[in-house]
Image (cartoon, rainbow, N blue to C red; front, side, top):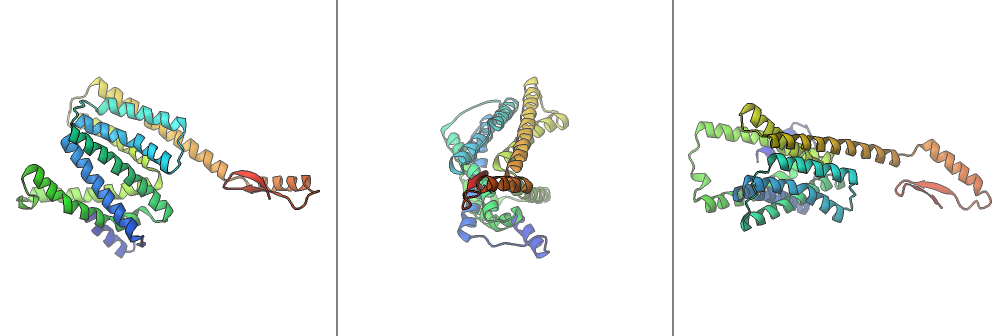
Length: 297
């Protein structure tokens, strides 16, 4: 709700223009994202930290699978290899124990599915409806808040036998809540911005970079125990991120080059074809930008 109120003030001050989005789409999208947040927290509560880290690692391959099946998106072998190296490094650095239980496994599976679908929709809706990350977040934030407000306190009370509304909130607690809300605004905005500008897979790669930074800062600032395994895992993960960045940039440049054939070259080839087919003037060859090939018309 703080995110929505902040964006409402921002649009009133003309920092961005609100754009209407199909009501059914934005409601379902907001409810799905809110459910994803709740399931991720429940997964952490019912699983060991090691199994929760495995859940986070599984989001990348599951996202790749969904985009390949439903969006017909192709990932090169180089990208897949770099992601494999990244996941291996993060796994070595962060996964400690793997205690399994049925309820925790079910919650993890649901969290993976809703998170992947939500992040794919974040990217797809922005591109198809031509809305910015700010406009989409502004429209969907109230529905995310609604699903969390309706289910969060109830589930909390069932699990802990304590009501969040009965808690006595001291000044320090309220201060940390306000700080948490301000940080949440930045996190929500940056999440939508990164996914809309790049892709859900790239966002997950950045998330694993965050994991490596958390481990590093924990050792540096809080003097958490750090082993050779942690160091090796972080180095492998960083190497995997570097590979992913390199291959992503290279493929983006290659795609741009293929999409934009020089006009002069098109004219020369069309002129050459017209001379060759002078005997049959009804036919000519033109460059088809979608097929990226010359066709006879």
